Each structure stands twice: as structure tokens, then as C-alpha cells.
Image 1 (cartoon, rainbow, N blue to C red):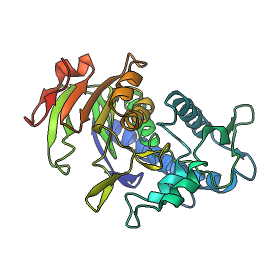
Image 2 (spheres, one colour):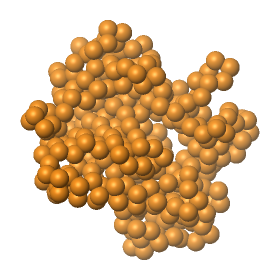
Image 3 (cartoon, rainbow, N blue to C red):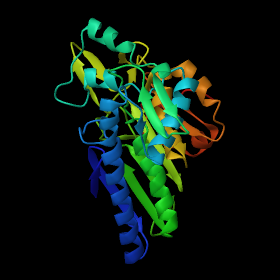
Image 4 (cartoon, rainbow, N blue to C red):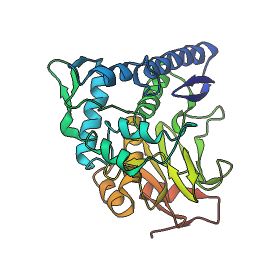
Length: 314
């Protein structure tokens, strides 16, 4: 195990002792470095320093940071801000997942909505800098950096020629090669209403990442209403989505992580339409009526293990 991104990282690595130890050390160091660069909850992170200074003058950033911000900007424009890298002020306002989580007053939400627009977010590819047009704008890349870490974990497994690996990065999973007995890994999809104690079903996988976003991961309840952490920057409130859980399967963990958030926020009709743009992406979506919607490849191979859940499409 290791610790990064605010939680435990779990590693199962199969290979020689030297291969496994070297791969673990490289992954662990990389995850620590990514956490130090991208954490929105540490005052000393590179991201926090950008948020503090980018409205005053452009900030020179690393190639990794620039590439992820450019990808995020593109996804934001494609999704009409269902995915939003400058959602930081709204995330801080709600603070869901922390003891100080609360329902903000309507005027507080209104006051930050104008800070969540792409037109105020400026990337300069020639200079390698990022800048904000408005004071108070802030990046939050929590919906993408763990997926990037999972993608990099697959790369490291391949470079160290491991037989197999299963790495869990706070809800994002990287699966590589095979288990010690030569069989593919069997991955369970969490039942979103089981408090993490049950699964909807499972699927065998290799050489893939899985990113899941759901209303059950981080939330609080007030007056009988569940307020989850997947915020809609067009309203300022948690997304009023028909989905309970969105799982995306791809060898590109960055894309998988971004899409899981995007599809959840877009909801059922717009989300399914949006996925049609990504022919190589597999998905398993669970709606509030406990119906499952999946790409053909997943539908054929997914083993349902909970009778409460039924297929929502033929």
C-alpha cells in the first residue's frame, strides 16, 4: 500500500521480487509527485500556487500540467462545461468530503458562477503558461489526475515487464496482464447503494483502466436530501443526474476519468449521446431505477451478481 491523493493506494504486483519492487517504487514516487503538483487541498501544491497567482500574471507550468490542462480545456468545450477544470471556487464553497461541508446560500453560489467559464482560462502553448482573467478563479483537477495516475501505472507495469498488476487509485483501477495463475483479473463494480459492501457484478479484464464516478462516493445529507460531490457548474449545485454510477473502461485512464465525471453530470440522454463520440470506449452506467446501460463489449461479458439490478436496454 501507499498514500496519495488523499487516500490509500493499493498495489498487487506479480513478477520477480526485483521487478515488482522496482515497479512499486517508481509508481509510488510518481504518485507522490503528482499529488504534490495537483492537490487542490494542499496550500503548498503547484496547483494551489497557480490558483493564488495566475490572475496577477501568467504562470510557467510543467509539460504534464500543461498537457492535462489542454486536455481538460478541450473536454470542457466539447461537453459544454459538464467537465470543468476551473470549477475550483464552487468545490471550495461546498467542501463536500470534509467536515466543513455545507449547503451554501443561493447568493454565495451566484457569486462564483461567473468564475467558472472557459473564456477566463488562458493557456499559452508557446510560452508554456496558464493565466486567469478574473481574480478568484481556481483550478481543480480532481476529476482527472487519478485517471492519469492509473494510465501511468499501466505504462510502468509494461516497462518493468510484470506478469500482472492490479492498482487501485482512490476509485480508479489499473489492470495489467494476468494473475499469478495466468487468468485475467476479475473486477467488481460497486453496488452504489451498498455503502461499499457489495457489488452489482463483475467482469474479467486485462490492460485497462476503470474510472467510476457516483453519487455514493462523497456526499452528505441534510433535511433528507443527498448532496454529492459531482457538481454542475451551470447551476452551482450537485448534478441532478439520472445516474447513480458511471464506469468507463479504457487503456487511457485520463480520458476514462474525465468521461466518468462528464457522463454523470450530463445525465442519461445527453450522456449516452456524448458517448457516441467515443467508439473505442466501453462503459457501464447505472441509473436511479437500478437499470444498467452498457456498451456491447461490456454487456456481453459482465456477470450480474445482484438481482436488484437489471439491464436497461436490449
